[in-house]
Image (tube, rainbow, N blue to C red; front, side):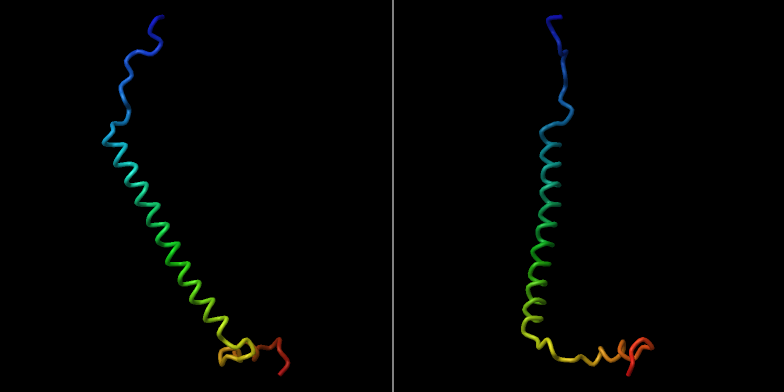
Length: 72
C-alpha cells in the first residue's frame, strides 16, 4: 500500500476550466449590467416622483372612484 492513489488523470483540462470561468464571468457581467441599468431607471423614476406634486389629482383616478363601493 505504498501507492494510496493510483494515477489519477485530470478530470478537467486547463483549457476547459478557462472556458468555464469565462462563461461564468460573462453571465455575472450580464447580471451586473442589468442591475446597473435597473438602478438608473429607478433613480430617474424616484427623481420624477419627488419632483411631482403629491396633491395633484390624475385624470385616471376618477375611474376607481365611480365604483359602487364609493358614495358619490
